[in-house]
Amino acid sequence: MTVDVPTQEGAPSGSPKLAAARRIAPATGKLGVLTPGMGAVASTFVAGVIAARRGLSPPIGSISQMAHIRLGTKTENRNPPIREFVPLAGLDDLVFGGWDPLSANVLEAARTCGVLEERELGTISAELEGVVAMDAVFDQRWVSRLDGVRVKPPASKWDQAQALMDDIESFRSAHDCDRLVMVWCGSTEAFSEPAAVHQSIESFEAGLKADDEAIAPSQIYAYAALQSDVPFANGAPNLTVDLPCMEELSRLRGVPVAGKDFKTGQTLMKTLIAPGLKARMLGLNGWYSTNILGNRDGEVLDAPENFKTKEVSKLGVLGTILQPELYPDLYDEIHHVVRINYYPPRGDNKEGWDNIDIFGWLGYPMQIKVDFLCRDSILAAPIVLDLALFMDLAARAGNSGVQEWLSFYFKAPQPSGTADVEHDLFIQQTKLKNTLREWMGEEPVTHSEAG
Image (tube, rainbow, N blue to C red):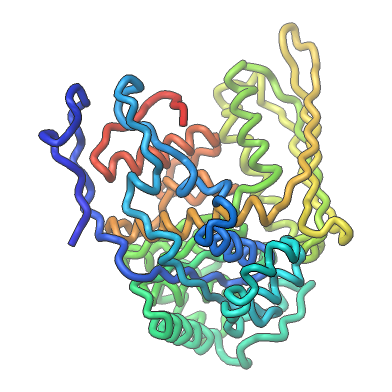
């Protein structure tokens, strides 16, 4: 059975001619959401979904649950919620699981990370405690500041991949899941670049069997997911599915992938502000960004090799938005600096400072100062939900390979081709909504929209 939209005969009078709708399998049964890493982000995500389906708190920040989508012209006044427009899995159908090297269950993780207060946790503590973490594939060479205590026994990387696939199938069976998705919520791994082992499925599998040092834990999770026909989204800046072998495997297995690095605090602000500067043709001399945070992510990023992975992700935003090759008088020599400092007293409540040096008419300088006191996991949790639901939708719509239409959610979006990816948040939003419109047989909106 598939979901189709009305033909032209069923469209409202005066509507534009509808495009052919995508045939999408219905969201029947349970959807299992697996998260490698069940720390601050994953525990906050699970707690928020449980609270939302109990009616304790709306899923604020979730595009899939809170946003409306305009259809046709403004005068038609068709603005349904996205969750009613496309056949998404319902919150009541979600089942949670994952792996963690430190915490035994989501309740323990939530209390350890300290994102949520006990008044929120207390009412849902039994459900959180019931989400038990599986032992993780862990290698301290990739996260030197963490000591994994709940990890799988030493084995070859090939055996680790097989063990993860066994975990996936056991979870699917135990929870009677119709479908699964996987969203990486683990720590940022040490910086790495593609190697010969990543160039094909054959070379990667040989590398797994040979314990190739260039294969990171996140890549083993991605391989296990794709071989199990589970869509995979990468929420960290790791080199994970943005590799020839993983793109090849995702196409071969017919499974969607997306990445990378959840767009939450400071980078969210950049993708909001930079398009405005460009729209007004205001120049930019420099953008200095610094952060303090004290959660597990901050501890991991205190290691230089892990910070470099994050730095590369954060630094790639401004160039594609501002297009210095087209506007050299405005953006040819931007001094872009990013710093992250681990400061334990701050916990998950990250503070990001930005000093933005701009110039205007006759070259006169001006400054913008931003002090964003954000809560990193509070901003990331709804992204996990949206990615889980949209990746599942993409799979049911027959999509495979890189889902560039989900670039809205990532600091360093993975391209689906050779062209540069888009970083402008508003263009990304239009691309996301137009993809949904197209799949449901509606005409795209090619200009700015409200709602």
